[in-house]
Length: 339
Ligand code: AHM
Ligand code: MG
Image (tube, rainbow, N blue to C red; front, side, top):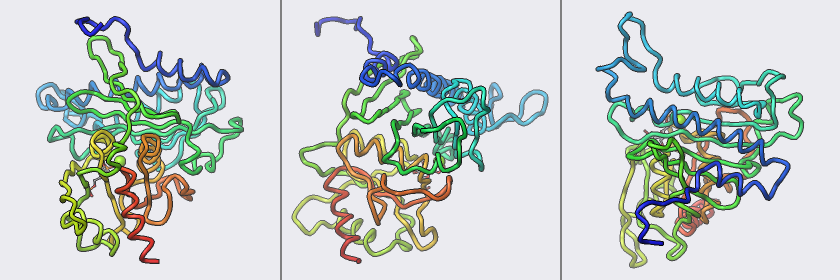
């Protein structure tokens, strides 16, 4: 057992999802096929991101190649790979990408029953200094996919059937929920497979509070009163508890990943300059809120449970507060006092 130097029973992400989906026989094959196309996109982006530092040497995305042509930027390239992989899966009918102004309606011959919303390369301003970045995705099932409509992509987050992200960091980690808990898989580069490494992720239950807060404090002078009060409490708690540590990477996937594993709270609040915050509802706020709830935490917009929000536009933004259950409970109380 523990003496085994080599694991011989590998739980790949495909095997894991096939097991999980066997409960709903009707969607088993389709969902697994869709996911394997998402996984392919993640592997491609991972390999491209790993080589990004060598761009000047070998000529990669964003650099000028030997013919003097400008190569595609990494985020544009990643988007194309994801769109093509998702369409060719034959399981999607409508796609919303952060990179495309309009929703993509899949041609009839390739249509399937899923709607996928995604940010192919979030945090791309961090590429040049080698900081972790990621892909975020959410999946909905469409009732009538023969004629996909824009409204099919404008469902509340609670109707998602799955959500996840892939983080391109010191290792490549894919975190996924299909609505029954959260599981993390790490890419074994020698196998080209994602292997289950973080089964059943829970944001710390006891205590239900974390020791970390994560926010861009440079915006503090424009915050509303509840956000300002909350952050003040993190630094100068009056109830005898110790002050929280501040960690902010500025890459949502990395900041949320740390929050899932270590607990605490991540905030991208509204401010006077951006009354709806910065983050996008469909492919940033919803998938991360879905994962946080599935891990036992909470996600709040300043007005309501984040997953209850019904978006009106595909690129809509919303403030977001997500993380350990009791930490979010505190910010909710501060907003309730305002009313
Ligand atoms: P992007 O889509 O332009 O990359 O912006 C999204 C990123 C998130 O990953 C991160 O949470 C946030 O922007 C950080 O914003 P700020 O620099 O304002 O703190
Ligand atoms: Mg983004």
